[in-house]
Length: 254
Image (cartoon, rainbow, N blue to C red; front, side, top):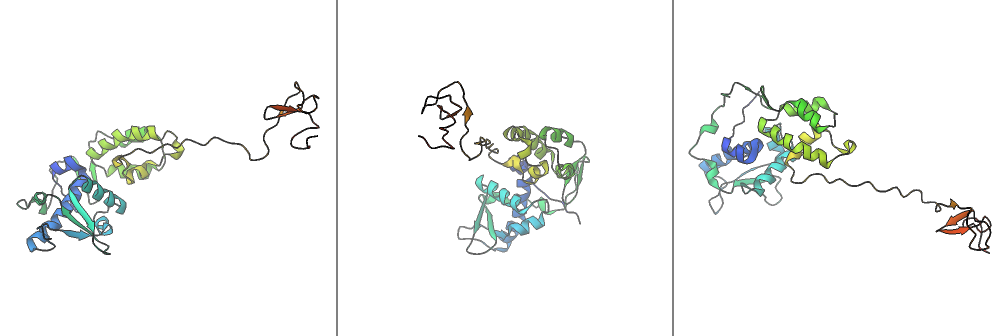
């Protein structure tokens, strides 16, 4: 059964669609706890708790690592509090500023119908019919053309705002990973939400080939005299010429 996911447009502008959706998810539970007087600390702040796995189950378009990244991002931006308590597997959540509960606004508890006829909504994706960022453009821009079907399916799940962020980030990511052999597939890039990373990948230069670990190379040099006996040199070692009889690797020095 499909279900709508709601968010406030001003929060989406500040924290992205994923961030705004997560904020609203927390809001619904914390508001309910506040009305019931549950999970309130000494400062009057109301909390709710959940596991990352349960949040991911409620939102199939988020993996558990993606939930973790959302939590860290919103916590680092001073939007939410998130903490572990004792040995409990759950994480406790609260808002830094409880005005974000919007207690006087009940609009986000009502069913949502998209007024925009250009938007088709399902539980797991929002597909825009008229998009400024078709898949073919980002596919060519990314360069590594493997796993196209998976990549295109993930691309269709992204909204226009997120697609714009990806289109801006891909050239930087490609420049940071010039060797396609070591650049991850585009579907992995999308699943990992690499455009949200604070740092680009670091290219590790290839180590120089030091050759074999056998005896050092001996070069032929017949135009010089052996440093031992003065005879015609046939080899050199460490820039010193030696004849056949005084080869450093087959004869002892006389």
